[in-house]
Length: 250
Image 1 (cartoon, rainbow, N blue to C red):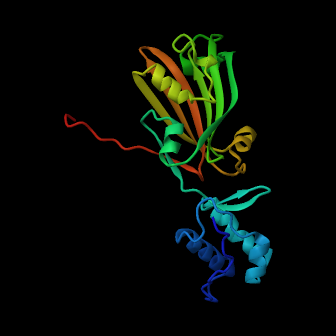
Image 2 (image 1 turned 90 degrees about the vertical axis):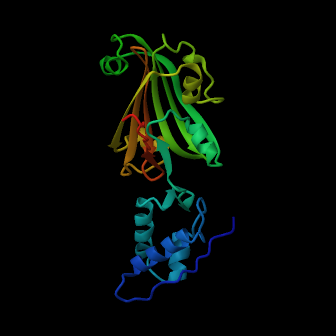
């Protein structure tokens, strides 16, 4: 990928603040794909020198375009053109690995936890189990081309999925394993906007002020909850969506 050009054509309209002219020029470079997704853009110092403006004037459009999801700032590396937002399936059971690979991207996962725990009151309510019952727990970060896009907190009923705790999740994903192992009879989805705590912000490599989307999914087999999972997405990199086609009998 070629090095991005620092040259920008500003409007020159004195009634438009300089920071807005710069913001519009950067937006045009992105929309025209002169600056392509994943490409590092010129540094603040380069832009200051090329445009003859202050660092404060440059910082504002970069900050605002980052908040809008068009740019992504990586500490120690620089500012990049953000990848287009991915859309997560809200209704269907779809593997995050399949979603990423269908876009021609590379998926990998980092396993942060894979263990058996005792269900406390809140977790036993979620899993519809007695307090103190053994529950399988897995925590993973999913990456698209080495950019974290999903943090997965998953809990499972070991009676319904006894082999889960021994699965190598460097070779498959929890969703892939469950889809292949047990087909649920019922699904529940709840979507919530949350602010990231320290752990979420660190794992998703986002600032604490960036909102996240949390999809809580529960699946049942018969009368038992198979799994309850919280899937947390950075709002700048993902969106949740669904399409529903009613049957002709409705």
